[in-house]
Image (cartoon, rainbow over all chains, first blue to last red; front, side, top):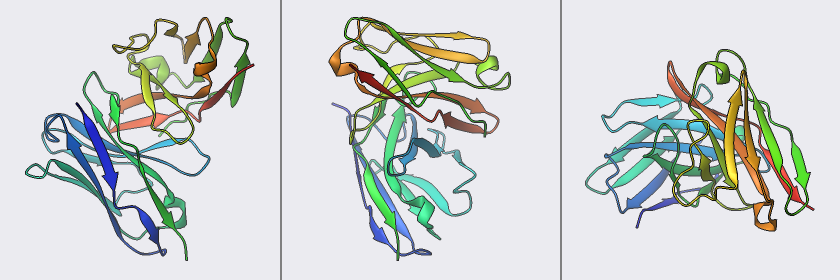
Length: 117
Length: 111
């Protein structure tokens, strides 16, 4: 069974750093593309970052230079390192994987990041 | 990154059909076939309902269908059921550089 489980969210002050984790099972994290998608409270979905199976990474303009996506194949885990956090980064962060096409077939349950003083 | 426009809300009665539109431009929806739709219940993760404009993943009811005309993609739900009440998001993939854009979302209310 495919599972994606996010963790690492919490309350952080503006300017701080946080690392999110997405532990996967039922497949290999390096076998397909993996993304982070976020959703601010009461708002819509926003794509954040992607890592392809070959290792290429891309970011939304809103997080470029501040966030870094990575993975640990031995731990079958995807990460999102978030630096210089801002209030507008407050959101539920989902990890998702793509299998069928250039879409997100499977999602985790999300982890809430709150940036506030 | 382009913006995709969806109506904030739509409603319908059980058994009826509704259509949710997703309007972009000739540079995005009008030029690609990588249009997808997601369903999201409150407090839950999104679920893929339609990909490549009109393809349904395994397990998704055939009451859900997708289409595209010009710069507008549409999601149609036929035989509306109470369980269809949720938020729906359209999305497209851009390859230069690789990125995804979501519409603002549409809240479907089943009356």
